[in-house]
Length: 622
Image 1 (cartoon, rainbow, N blue to C red):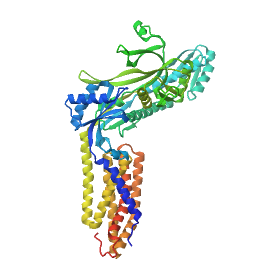
Image 2 (image 1 turned 60 degrees about the vertical axis):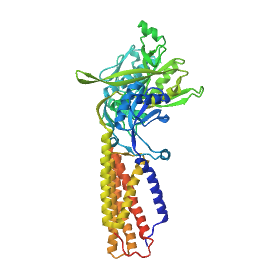
Image 3 (image 1 turned 45 degrees about the vertical axis):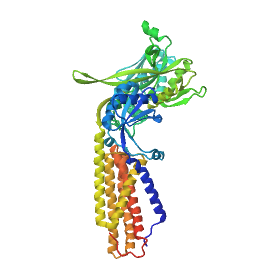
Image 4 (image 1 turned 90 degrees about the vertical axis):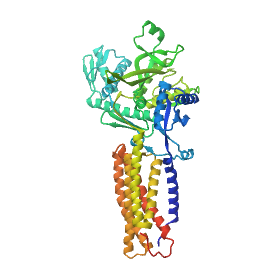
C-alpha cells in the first residue's frame, strides 16, 4: 500500500513556506548607493542630509533617496545607476572634505516586514558584487623595535622602582638590552629583579653590566604576535565600519589579505583600513604650552602635541605631554561607552591587559589629581608623482583626543571622563578597533568593478539556469509524470538552498555558484536512481503502487550512502579551506542536505499524492 504520513505533508508545507519567505529578499534589486559616515565626531544629522542633497542637485546629479540611518550613524544616498554613483561620490568628497568618509556600496529594497523576520538577501562575494582586494605587508622590524623598546623601558622602571641606581639601560642593534649600574654591588640584586620580572630572558652579569639577550625563538614569537594582532585589529576596524562579509586573513608569515565586497573605491578603502593608527596614554606636563612654544623652552621631558578640537583663535590647541609612554592601544582589551555612576555623565570604561594595567597602576598611584592624555596617532599613506614616477610615503598625524584628571589610582579597569556622549561613543569605537602592533604597507591592490561583478552574476546564474533547464527537459521527456515530480523536487531544492544560505548569512561567490550547480547534478542523480529503481521493480512484476514504495525504499539507502561521503568531503573543504573554497563547501553541504530531503521525501510525497489515493493503478507514466 502506498501511503505517506500526514504530518510529513505538514512539514513539507512549512518548509515550503519558510523557504519562500527567506529566499524572497534575493528577488529585490539592489541600488547603487553612497554611504556617508563621520570620521571623527562630525555630525550626521538632517543638516548633513540637506547639505548632501543640495550639493548633488547643484552638480546636476539625480538621486532617488537620501536617508539617515541612526543605527549606523550614517547617511545613505540611493542613485539611479553606477555612472551617476561615481559622479555623486566625486562631488560629495569635494564638498565634505576630510570630516566624512564617502563609500560606494549597493543597497537593497527589501520590505521592512521581511527585515522584521530577519529575511535578508544572500551576501555576494567579491567576484559577484565587486569590491577591493589588498595585500598588505607587515613591518616586522618595526614590530620588534616596538616590543624590544618596551622591554627596555620595563627594565628601567623595574630598577628605578627598586632603588637600583643605573647610568643607562640601552638597546643594542642585536636586540640585546644592556643595563650599566652605577654600583657593581647592586648587580646581583638587579639580576634577581629582572629574572623574576622576565623569567624567559637569559641574563649575563659582568661587573656592573647586565646584558639581557632575547632568544631568537622569542623574537620570532614577538613578530608572529604582531602580525596576528594586526589581523585582529583590521577585522575589528572593518567590522566597526559595517562592511558586509569582509575577508581579513593572514597570508604567509608577514602578509595580510583584505577583501572588502561592495567597496568600489580603493582610495576610500585605504583610508578606512590603511590608516595605521595607534593609541597612547601619556602624562600631561605642567606648564603653558603656548608660552613654551613661543619661547622655545620646552621642558626636556616633554613634547608638544595638539588637541583635535580648535581653540578660540581657530587653531589647534597645543598640549605638553611626557615623552615617557604609560600604556598604548595594543594593551587595550575592551572599551565600552557608559554613564558615570556618580555624575551620570558620559564616560568610557577601558580594560587593559595585565602588563598595561600594572604600568597604569604605578603611574596613577603617583599622579592623583593630575591630568592624563589619550593620543591618537595615524600613519596615513600618501602617493606623489615625482619625475613621472609614483612615490609612496607616509604622513604621521598625532592628535590628543582626550585629557582627563586622575581622580584615584586605578589599574586594568578605569574610566575616561570629560567627554560628550558622541565623543564617548567614538572613543570606545577607536579603542575597541585597537591599534596596529606594527606599520603595514600596501604592496598589491586590485579592484573588481560592479559591472564585472554583475557580469559574473549573470554568467553564473546563466550556467545554473541552463544546467537546471537541461535536467528538467530530460526528466519531462524521459520519465513523464515522474519527470514532473522530479522537476518540482529540483525547484524546491534550489529554493531551499537559496533560503538556507540567506538565513545563515552565507556568502555566495563564483565557487559557491559552482557548488549549487554541482548539487543540482547530484540531486538529478538521486532522482534518476529512484526512477530507475521503480522501473526495475515494475519489470520484476510488482504492482505499480508497490513498485513506487519499494523503489523509494531501496533507493533511499543508496542515496544516503553516496551523499554522506560527499558531505564529509565538503566538511573537510570547509575545515581546511579558506575564502572561495569555504564558500564552495558551504554551498555543497547545504545543497546535498536539501537535495536528500527533496529527492527522497518530497518526491515520494508527491508520488503518493498522485497515485496513493487510487484503488487500482494500471500503469505508471515513467
